[in-house]
Image (cartoon, rainbow, N blue to C red; front, side):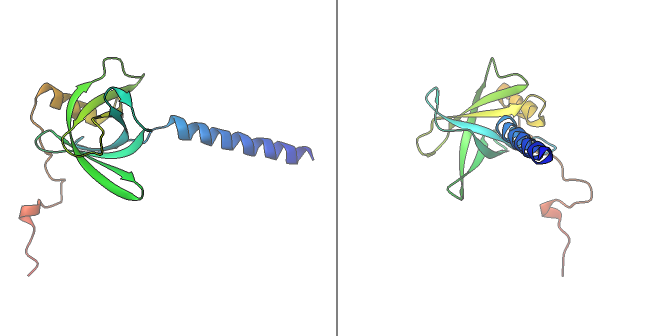
Amino acid sequence: MAVEYLGAVAFVAVLGAMLFAAFKLEPHWASKDGLRFLCNTQEMLGDQPAGRPRETQVAVLPDGSLHVSQKRNMRRRGSTWTLIGKSDSPPRKREVFLARSRGDTGGWTHLAIRLPASSRCVAVLDGILAGHDVSTSPPAPGTAAPEARPDRG
């Protein structure tokens, strides 16, 4: 009887820890060059948050704009945004960037992009805000650039 009770308590404790981790941990991935990354973003209407944070794929385009892709209702929707600023007082160990819509985004005017402070893409986004050119990385060793593919004939 005591073993069953102890097992039930352990099961509930594991479920509670998993629930805590699900709400506290944010997804993040960044490519080696920092030009593509996965993070949480939140749409803003004016200066107020609208909706909940969503997992988002972001790609930095050569002109410094951001191509943002979010999954909504089982479909991916992409839009283009311009980076306009960075939060002066972000949460601990986080950086928050603000982007403005460049087209039809369903009424959202701004997008808050949350990233870990140690992420590779923070330096890229800081460079865009400082006016530096976005450079693409060279191809990985052992791979051919798209224009230099070998002839398969």
